[in-house]
Length: 462
View 1 (cartoon, one colour):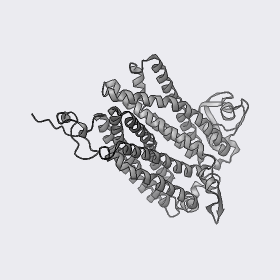
View 2 (cartoon, rainbow, N blue to C red):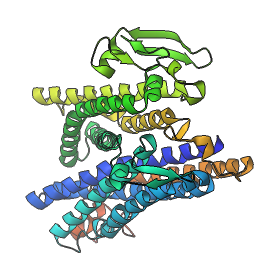
View 3 (cartoon, rainbow, N blue to C red):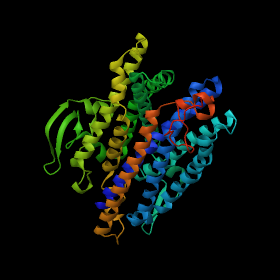
View 4 (tube, rainbow, N blue to C red):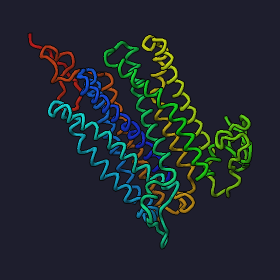
């Protein structure tokens, strides 16, 4: 249990940064493309501003991600031994094809602005953005394989690949990839919209923030309804491949035909029933089977030891879905205000965008909990139990010590990174020092190092 808590903590912390940087890298790539095509400095300034935030987030994601690979050996060595022939190459492919690609061009993106041609700088941004998508591809392929294993055979208690195509493109992978990448783009869009809305409310950087505000909200208006559709398709595949998870998500104990959509309840695993249940008749069957009297699974169809922990799965699923519809309403609000030509006058809507800045992160964590806790007690669905994957020699004291160390270390990393990002947000999108006339240097200050904050003001000579 301590190993599970430790891995849940580290991966929940880590996933926040890739979820943000996937969308942010592609946002920067779009800004670079617009600057290359139009030559307008506003796009360059926005790109420079968000590239600094990307660099910090990317670094924090790398640091927190390295730890997880060590846990495969320290805490889950039996799991690594059983599944290593399948998952080891997949994770290595992610390093070789994605991480190396990002590392090769990240330096040009961060420090090559005035050192390489515009086209080369755009190409670097494109490669970094492509690297984040490729990374998502391999990581989600390996994770999806744990949920819907395919293309393997078991010999002497270990998995061996019989078809790499079936391993990589396992049944749940396409739905999970589309759902997660869209979630990442939405997360970034809400951050950009929220920060831009804050600047607009304060009357700062209007030339820049009006563009980013409109672009981010436009992306939300497109992606929010798409994400609801992708979630529905993913749910239908989950019911086919992991019916116990769906039963826990929906809170159904009996299952059967004409099942209600349970809006609120308190699942009781010992009594095998829900307390304080409020539901809408037939709606769950309609959503899951597209028929009013469609048959849905119930938790009692599975042995108690094969059921996930229902309360967490039930509630995190509702948090995720609720945020999804909130995102949809924000997108519809943008379309309405754009139609009325009141987008930049509606302060109430700008406050809404500020308040919804973090909801993408919350939805991703809730969805991740739903997905992974819903898979329990299986480490590889239906084949390997989580309890059988833990390192045999691991002691309670050792697991507790490492968990405590991670809590302290990650708190320090997160605090430092957040402080630095907030400093950058306080400064806002400003022209680079190299682009200013000498008399204008005092307006922005001079950074002491590349990527450092301009923490001192240099007054021009009399």
